[in-house]
Every structure is written in structure tokens, then in C-alpha cells.
Image 1 (cartoon, helix red, strand yellow):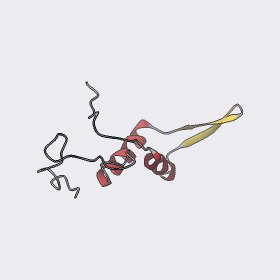
Image 2 (tube, helix red, strand yellow):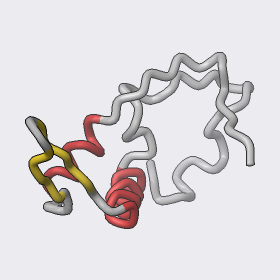
Image 3 (tube, one colour):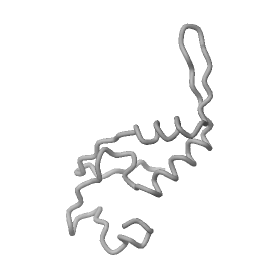
Image 4 (tube, one colour):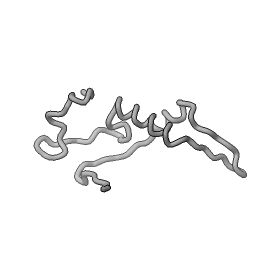
Length: 86
């Protein structure tokens, strides 16, 4: 396995959509622990919510879509629209 990303794209991550979706889905279990609180969600619930978000918006975990340059990788050329995303 390799973790790969394009270093020349100015990617800014934003996980607020997944946090909000998990919170509103009612899958978070909470409990008091000492003077604080602990929250937990099953991995299967989290992944299912993440998949649904990414189906609607493949850039759901980014602040904004990347600025692609035509003719340079990655460029969403001929596959655009074939995955059901316009």
C-alpha cells in the first residue's frame, strides 16, 4: 500500500461535513468519563456515511475542489460524467 497525493495541488482539508453528518445520523454514543466526555462511533457507520458523502461530492473532505491544469495529471478529462458526477 502507498499513500499518494499530488504535491503541486493546493489541497486544504476540511472534515466538518463528515463530522456534521456523523453527528446528525444519530450513530454517536457518548458517555461521561471523569470530568470530561467521550464519544464513539463504529467504523462501519463512519465509513458508510463517508461513502455517501463522497458519492454526492468527491471533494467532500476538501475546502474546495482542486485546480486542475488541462494536459497535466491529474486531469479529469474523458472520465468526467461517466461516474455519475457532473
